[in-house]
Length: 376
Ligand SMILES: [Fe+2]
Ligand SMILES: [Fe+2]
Image (cartoon, rainbow, N blue to C red; front, side):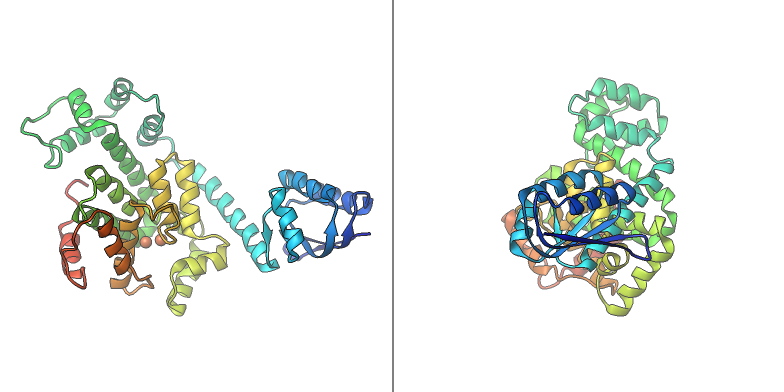
């Protein structure tokens, strides 16, 4: 017969420990779990001392997981396996389970705080969302753009810039939008949206500047490796936005974020170590959530959500140049970084291009950084 114990921790968290072998008719266990789930949502469920359970117990946990966000801890392989089979993630220790709960809280707080700031109620966001819909058409888009004279002149400037100019100056909106095409227009709207976001995250000037430099370098890497033309602007935008999660974290929790920066400096470790300790989640994961919430295209969500770990299938071709540019900048700025040169070589190999700089890219990179971006 199973035993169940409930303890309330000082931070309000409920710690529920279950022991022994749980049978389908262990009423006390089921009843207690049910009443706890009604009164509390933050629950740590310790299953390290159970010796096994009937399938009904795991099914019940699965049902419970829809109503409350409990975190289970288990060690016995049989218990871990049974939990997995009903879709429950198991944590190895109390600490990791608590961090996961904390990470969820942080994410929730950021998403709800950013809902209050006036970035979603802008033309750029409306256009960006419209264009991500597969039924989007240029005619409709043009009607929306016409409402915003600032955007009209940006589009005309873009189409007549060295990047798109083909010998004839284009002076009206319709042919300009056709020439640029959906992908370039989308980049432009995303850029405008991001520009609006940076006006809100003004205290994050260093991170914003780091993003601008990262975008320029990542695009240069992509061009130097002779990656297909349409990848250049994607990589640039990815570099620009890669640390958007860090900006959001620091914007919503300025004091706590200072602790992360102190930690990184004292321990000489990348900031995400400190973020995981202090917030239970890092800026890469926060960035991914924001990018998804804000309808960013999938490639951009992947760059933002994978720029440290490079877990995307086949070393995502768009993430790799951002990874290299980011770590180059961190190295030269004296912030902890991850070695990137072999990845840079690998990226060039993907396109069968030859690296034009010898051992170190710094001379060329610095030159490009001083030149800035031709368009923005
Ligand atoms: Fe980062
Ligand atoms: Fe970065």
